[in-house]
Length: 224
Image (cartoon, rainbow, N blue to C red):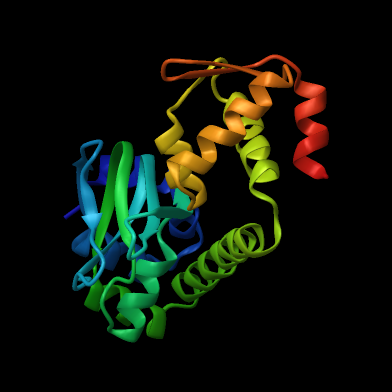
């Protein structure tokens, strides 16, 4: 159950509650549970039964697939005010979770039981619209991943990823293996590309760190 004070804070992260009817807000307050999930915790593993969905108030969750060879590829991340479309789909279709969802940054989340989630989709317009918007936004993100994997060169994808990561922190704190997992490649392939970029003077690679030396040329590579 959510207290009135908690509800006020949650409503700042979830606009759907500000547009909802008093009945939906009351049901939400009665059914929801506010919890903290530590970094590194697996929210779901592939094949898990989904009995609740997490709406994030803070933190970041990474959703990814693991192939038969052990390689990983990131499908998407979700954070403040967002949720997981694969969880929503699993609840609505009553199927198992098809990927892995792991907390990257300690999260505070509102947990909604699966039966309530399905019921609200049927009975409350505001909740149904919230879910459909969620599905639409994340589907676009997943399609972008498919486009990258199928049609884009790996060196271009590495360059684009480094530029993206540099916006949050520079020099970039990451490893060759983490980049490979992000892009669904092998560590060996990523290492060769990083070595090539380093030899061209575009980046400087250290232990667990990558510094971009020529942003302009790296941007050119990312859009070729």
